[in-house]
Image (spheres, rainbow, N blue to C red):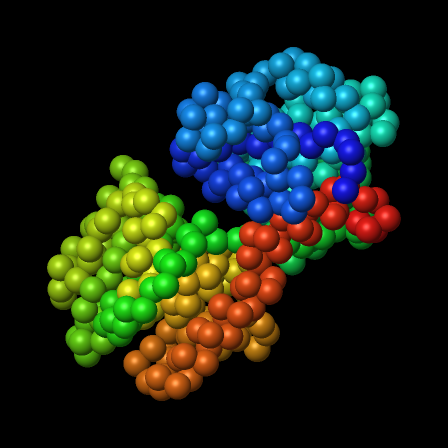
Length: 365
């Protein structure tokens, strides 16, 4: 491994709630050989993160370009890993100052190496959309970062295609997300075949409820669904809409709203329930924490689309199959999905790939 120091620029580490920050921490925690080193430069909350994680090398720069630049200059010719999503660094998704800070650092330390992990990409928007200009500015920031980065990484094939178009580069790597929910150790309890889960952030839970609304009503009527666990943080807007939708069900009482739970408790529910409803599509599955939680824990992942012909979505359960799939077929697919996960998306796999890509140009190319 390289002797260069490692610097990770990210958003907010635990205990702050942030998927990108959690990804940053878990990928580093499982990093091979040198996981005891690494400086984190975070937007905010460094003191709380140091206390919770037992990691002293966490400093916040509070969105200040000058403070970030000083920290990078202090690190010198380091391996720098930037976890990027526009909204993570600026409320409107346009942190226009980031490329300049990194470009100045690269000019001062040409032996330093920059890896950028793009967690989000701008989508196509109509010109009349109030987000159109923001998307264009973010696309420009991404092009600038791609121009100075040694290694480009993202988390879906759709994002790879967008990044290739924006950057003009072909050397882009795709690494699926890992699950933030680790399986319960030595769990031998039987699964409850009438219990379902919806897990994730408020908008994702609402979208999943909307997608499966007619199926949920049908499964209630046939007694296929007796309990639906809803897990994740709540907000005023999307949680209210979700509650209104569920109040219209024949049996609203099937929904058990847990709110935000500790990871171990979420894992216990994933080990107990037979199915988890997800809002994944062929374009988004590889960045879905809910889908990966199913894979890691052996819970059956239910998708709205018909059966997929490619791995790992071919191991998911189409909504129309829920009431008719055999126990043998269900077990076969969940076992296959779990095996795929630990070979391709487990944090140890992700951490090793990131370490190799960020440290050795010859191996990254």
